Image 1: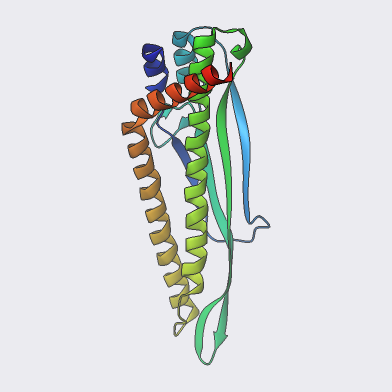
Image 2: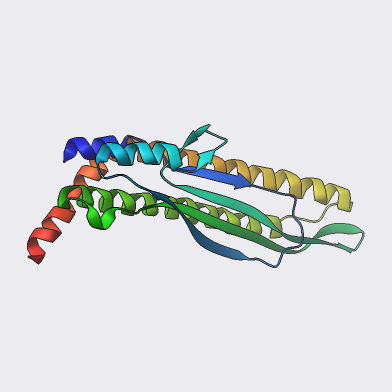
Length: 208
């Protein structure tokens, strides 16, 4: 069981697809959706191959992943001129996250052992991608607060430049946190899967 789980787990390194257009009008605020890609196979080797061939491709890594999170930031921002100065009037940062997850068509026609491994892996993939979405939501709120706290400048051009700089800083910090999360998850993957598998086995045994 441990050998099979290591084969499947070797591919898990969460991927995010990030889009940051210029702030523009948008009706969305924060939303999240799910999408699925199907995989076949009846053995651990089959699943490993299917995930590597059918998982979402990301430009950042140039490879396929067992799951991914598309992240799109946008929003609305207005400027207000008052007392000879120009500052940020209103801000609405928008965020849409789309989580892509695998769905195994042969789950109900497999062995109990492989089914247990798959259920554990699939749940961990979902948790991993949900965390990517949560990190993005945290930075969406941070960006909104940072922009609203900017002090007025002599001209709207100066304020606009400050908005751009602030947005770039927050997005850079967002990217670093997302990458850091992936690095930590990758390092702890084997230990985490072993722990999760043991927990599921104990749950199944106690439920009999």
